Length: 456
Ligand code: PFF
Image (cartoon, rainbow, N blue to C red):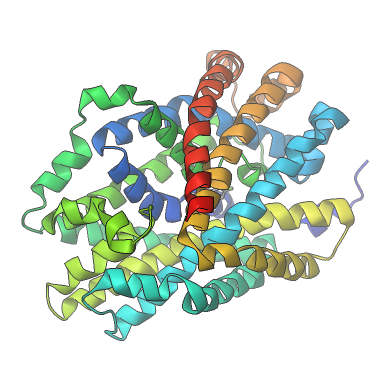
């Protein structure tokens, strides 16, 4: 029996738009631009994009619907929610979620820090021509630590303010600005000459690449990362939902907006990269003296835009401000998973939980700020492997342990029996085997990233 004041203390969304924008804000992040462009560039462009779209539709939407169901049904944070549904033996899944959120935010914030640095430097006209060297200077060590700490402080501040005043208000302000900036940039980059091969690389799949297991795993991992799935973020947001709207429709809205933003971001990035030669973008490992390409976006975008004259710095600043907004609304959801769990399980006050765990996550991010190989490894481990594992286990839990309850919850808002059957069939018979296969493909790249880490 719930106490009368308990729900309002826990917080809830003020409006449907607020919830949708916050969920879209979680989904749309560095994943859509930084990660999408570097993984798509590694994975052959259009083939990757096509596989990614398939995973978003066939795996992402059913898993997102499941997370929305669990959150709204239980009205508690993931650790408790999972235990309510699966009993004590499933409790580790809730902890896996929190560990993923903790680990993911630790390096995510380092990259978000780069966006702040590049945005402010562009405004001051202080980004030099040689961005590879510059990125090496500001992307690691003390400068990276400074921007990482600042970014975490902003995130902690917003999460500390709570669901309506922190999470919802930030999304309502930043998301429309982000959409405007993105559309403006896409229109501008369509006017670039020489972008044609960029569009072709991005939009014309070479079919033989569709069967490449590395590309398949990358596409699946990217779908989970970009949709914020597999670690209870969407679940946590849904636990603040009161209304009995159609959760299937909410899942499609969130996923479609997220894909739309990633796709348009690709329309911005690829013509620019190609306008200035793909070789440079793909060969970044050599430029950076590391085995990774995490800096692709940061190294290629500024020199390309600087070449158009002084207006270039305005466009660079707009680009990185947009990235910063996107990162912030996602980081908020990452920290919220951890903080909501601490509040629900240990009954800590929100502000105390946000500050304490904010500090711990900031410390955990230091290795990523000091070593890009560590960052890459953390991204493979937390940003792909943990999320897919979390998604697999969520599907098994919902599909095999709690299907009747889950279906009843979904039915509140989604009356169509055929659509509900499509969802339950996907979550039982399609999502688990696909994720098992993809996870097994994912072990090798994870191992390689680990070897690069200890070897370098
Ligand atoms: N979806 C975010 C992005 O694309 O950048 C990252 C993310 C946020 C992943 C929240 C997972 C999550 F729970």
